Amino acid sequence: MKDIQNFAKQYQKEMGWEISEESYAESRDSLLNNYMLLTTEVAEVAEELRQAFNLTASYVENGMEEKKAFELAKDQIKENMGKELADCLAYLLKFYNFFGIDLEESFYAKMEEVKNRKNKDLVKSTK
Image (tube, rainbow, N blue to C red):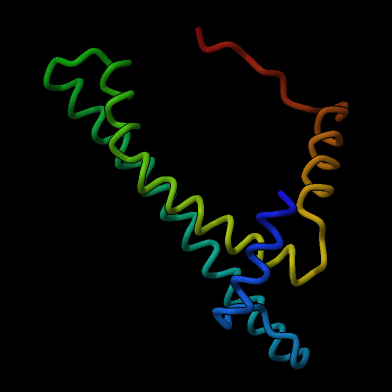
């Protein structure tokens, strides 16, 4: 994770895509712009999911077994899904880097916090 975070920091600097630190107003505008861009990318992930669900329904309608239909649909959106998730990650890394947050440390600390929650959701089997 550290390598990815460092790569993103250097890449964003080379491309001139860092979040501005010139002034409060520029930082605020840059943070809001990047947040809007992130939410746009998250919506594009939703579009890929929608595509997979529509493909699955179409295949099932044409007689394919549901599990096989969904596997085929997942395979068909896999490349675009990877691109959209990578876009999301790139924007998230901008925020990590702007605020000087260590991605790896933050991730593992949060997972430990979730693991130890008293009010966590119970996982129910769908089988």
